[in-house]
Length: 108
Image 1 (cartoon, one colour):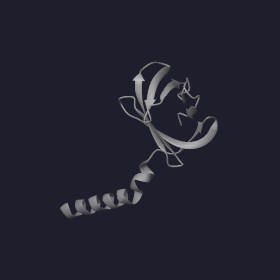
Image 2 (cartoon, one colour):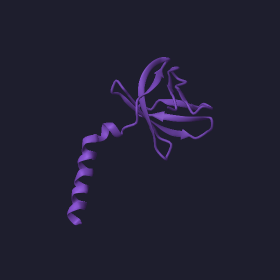
Image 3 (cartoon, rainbow, N blue to C red):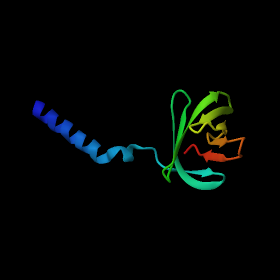
Image 4 (cartoon, one colour):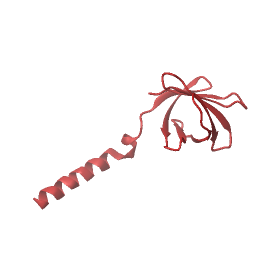
């Protein structure tokens, strides 16, 4: 019996290794930066932090400065301020009032 379990454990480890972290990542979504479609992935932490990874290889992290609903204020990694609006469908729009940049992230 122990031999059977160790073989099963080895098979699971090989399977997980074969899948790799890329296969476990969230799928790409069609987001938009200033109304130009670009694929992204977003992830959210319990403290309200949002990370957006763009398909082109860039990433940005946004931390909550002022929680609100439907609009919260976030600060990005470069010290820019963004207003986050969560729309009724669950989609998110981030707007930078200082420069007018706009990011659209769909729920799915």
